[in-house]
Image (cartoon, rainbow, N blue to C red; front, side, top):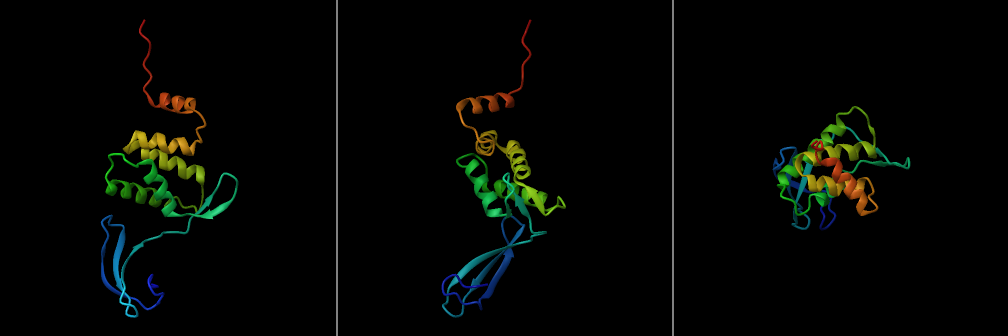
Length: 155
C-alpha cells in the first residue's frame, strides 16, 4: 500500500481488525520512510461489476458513488449510520450475487429505492425525485399519492 504522505510503496501493517460493519477489515499502517500513520479498509469483492447506463455507456461499478447518493437521500434523517452501511453492503452483495457482471443502472436504482422504502419514506421520495427525474411539483404529488393507501369512498 502506497503511503499517502510521501508515496513510499513499502508500508507496514501495525494492526488489523474487523471494521464496525463486520464486512471489511480496518488496517492501521505505518510508513518507515516518513513516519506517517494512516488507516485503510479492505472489502471482499465477489466480481467486477459494470454498470450499463440508460444511454448505453458502460462504466465500472463504484460503491462510493452508490454510497454518496444514498447518504444524500438520508441526509438529516433519523437513520443510524450503521443501518445505512448495512443497507449499502446488502445492496452491493445483492448486485454481486445476481450472477451477472453487467447490470443496468435502472436495475440498481430500483434496488436502492426498494431498500430506502423499507427504512425511510422521506429518503425514498428524495432518491426517487432524482432517479425518476421529477420536473415539477406535480411529479412529487403524483408519486406521493401513489404511496398513500387508497381509501374507498363511503356511500
